[in-house]
Each structure stands twice: as C-alpha cells, then as structure tokens.
Image (cartoon, rainbow, N blue to C red; front, side, top):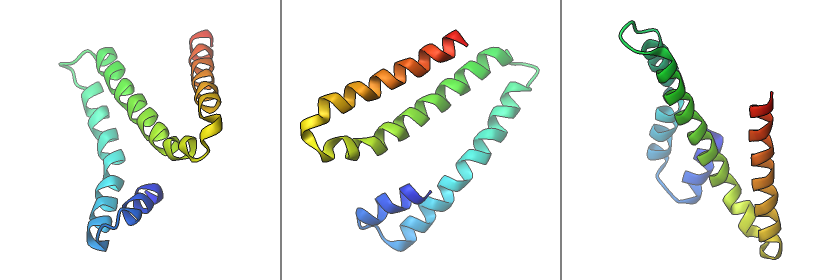
Length: 102
C-alpha cells in the first residue's frame, strides 16, 4: 500500500483519490482469498484446476508488481542496464529451477 501511495503522490493525484485507491487495494487481498477458497471448495469445480489458475494469476500479479518496482531502479544507472537485466533474469530462472528441483 505504501508503494502505491507513493506512486500516486508522485503522479499528483488528489488526496481523496489516493485514499479511495488505498482502501480498495487493501480489500483486494482478503476478498481474493475468500473468492479463491469459495471456488476451490465448491463441489461443482475441479479444485486442482481452480488452484492452478488462481496460483498462476497470483504469481503473474506478483511478477508484474516486482518488475514494475524494479523498472525505475534498472533505468536509474544506464551503463549497467544490460548486466542488471541479465542478473535479474538469471535470478528468476534459478528460483524457477529450484522450485522444479525441490
């Protein structure tokens, strides 16, 4: 929430808009957890398929947020942009291999 508030302040949105956005953002995680639990425990759905879809959406959202935050850091010092991008991708793939291996 702090990062979103900072980004909205830098973009010069009104305080009211920032407050409403923060409140809506704060309710997304609990509502998503309740929604996911309701879908996975439903007798009409295949819970493994639902779990895979919801986990994929969560992972994609996490990666989007992480990359969005790192974008400014990567562009801050241009001479090492290629090296930093390669190091980030290497770390990402090593963590994916670790997940597959373990």
